[in-house]
Image 1 (cartoon, rainbow, N blue to C red):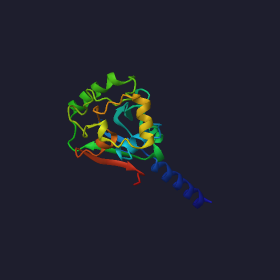
Image 2: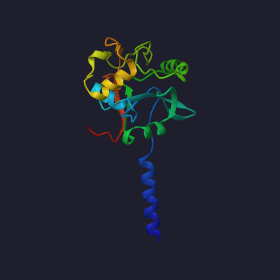
Image 3: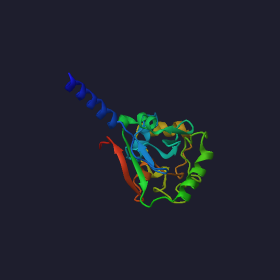
Image 4: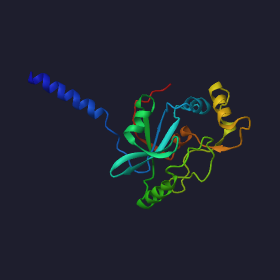
Length: 192
């Protein structure tokens, strides 16, 4: 009986630790495959499995993700991970460590964004982060693969018949692929 209870306690402990959160720092970027209605279109257009991202900040010692969904908001990291497909994610960090002054500047820049409406058209405007370090390659809408029916439907929904093909945008995949970043944590991402 004691052996059985010990085994059960051990299994519960292992299960609990497997759901532990990754070690993160302020300013880390986290990406996932979203289950939102626009995720499929983003994946098809960018040829990337990453369709949603955010920046991690600690609040009262707990990790949150600053994300743009319906509005820009801070979501507890565990909830953010749970919203993604299969609970999979990748956390990336700048290869050059951020100074406290840069982190403070990043926090200050994030504050006025909270509560703003989500930019459904992905316009590029003063969206530099990491204290003037550009992460990821800007592209034009015309650079993406817009041939898939899911992509065309989402473009029509967002822009109507006047799609700004020269609009500068950046995708979660482009940011994630930046050589300025390194992987610091990931969970259950598989190649498709």
